Image (cartoon, rainbow, N blue to C red):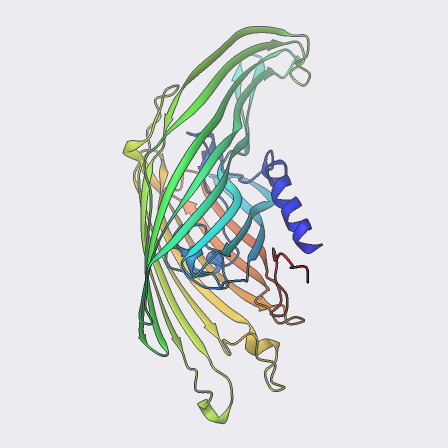
Length: 443
C-alpha cells in the first residue's frame, strides 16, 4: 500500500508543483526567474552544501553520481516542504511576504552493486512578486502594479555507475536527464485614481525542453574511522525551446479584463540559452566505532563539508530580451554531529537524543542581479536537526532546517531583504525485514 501511495505521489507531482509560489523576490521578474529558489531540508542546514554529501541512506539529486552509493534493496522516497518569510526595506518603505510550497519529490534505489537510479521533480526557477508604485499626474495619480507568477519545473531521471569499487577507493559517475516545463508571467497594470480604466501589459514565457547535468564523486577511506569524499557537478549551457507572448490590453475595469480590447498580441518562438555552472565540494567524516569512549557504548560521528559553486552568466541569452547578468560564486560550509551514528542500535541506554543529527552552517554568495550598478549578495546562517523514525528498523527520518539571511548590495537607498526560511523533509525507507518492488515467487 505504501509503495502504491509513493508512486501515485510521483505521478501527480507535476500537478502539485506546477502553479505554486516558490519565491517572493522582486528580482525574480528578471530573466526566467529565480534559479532553484528553494532549499533542501538537509543541505539547507549545512550552508546549502550538497556536492559531496554522499550517503547510502540519503538521496542527493544535486550530484547524480550519489545514486550508486545507495544501499541495495533499500529504496528511498523523499519529500520536502519549504516556507519563507521575508521583510523588504527600501529607504523608509517596508513590506513583507511569505509562501509555503512543495520543494521536491524523489524516489531512488540501487539496482545492483554498481548502478543506482532516481526519479524526481523539483523547481527549476520561479517567479513571484507584487510591487506597487504611483506617480502624480496633474490632478490625478497614476498607479502601477507589478506582479509576477509561475515558474518552471524539472522532472528528471538519474543514473549513476561506480567505475571503481575498492575497500579504500570508490569512484562514481552520474547524470540527470530532465524535462524542463512551465510558464511564468510578468504583468504591469496601470490605472488612475479617478477611474477603473487602465492598461495591462502581460509578458509570458513558456518552456518545454530537455536538460542534462552531470556529477562525479570519489570516496577515499583513509582509515576505518576516517572517510574523505570529493565531488564535482557540471551543468552545461543549453538551449531551451521557448515561446514568448507579449499582450497589451485596454481595460474598462482592470480587475475584470474579459470583453476588453486587446491592442497588441505578439506570439513568438525562439531559444533561451541557459547559464553554465560548476561546483566543487568535499566531505570529511570521522566516526568512532569502537564504542569505548568515556566508558559508554555510543559511537559519535563528526562531519565537515564545504562547497564552491561558480555560474557563468555570460553564457546566458534570451531571444526575446536583452537582459544581462553578472557571474556568481557561492561558498558554503557545514558541520554535522551525531552522538551515535548507528541508527539501528536499539540499546536501552541509547535514546532519541543520541540518534539525532545536529547541523549548522553558513553560506555566502554573489547574486546575478545588480542595483545601481552594484551586485547583490546573499549571506545566511543555517542550522537544523535530523530525527530518525525509530518505530521500525529502517533509515527513515524527519529533517528540519532553518536559515536566517540577508540579500542586499550594501547601499541604504536600495532594496534590502531580510528573510527566514524553514524547511521540512521526510525520508521514507523500508524496514530491514521488508523489501519494496520485490516480486514474490510462487512455490
